[in-house]
Image (cartoon, rainbow, N blue to C red; front, side, top):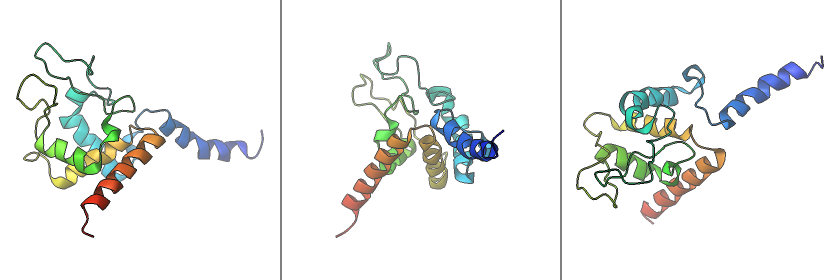
Length: 151
């Protein structure tokens, strides 16, 4: 066997696993991401799916006229929102503009989660996206921060 084979496999395998789209094992995640995953599993997964896959037919209104919970993985659109928008949606809840009811389909968690815990959830959500989606979301967040900062 080539003497470079094992070191190469050890170097490349983690990157391939991350690129595969499956969330990594919690033991291999940075602390904030691991905490975010635990919080996601406790408060979010029942609606948004254990792997961030969202509800079935998430892009079509249900019988109440409400949009079902969207996926947070690479198949959804969560990655298109800035950190500030994601934080606000988690903290204050969300009612899809096209819902036919006035209720918040996404409940508010500001009385349940700390600001730090909400940020950890956002950190975890990033692990569900592709590299290109993470770059896009990072740019969105920077653009928003620059627009909001005093000149």
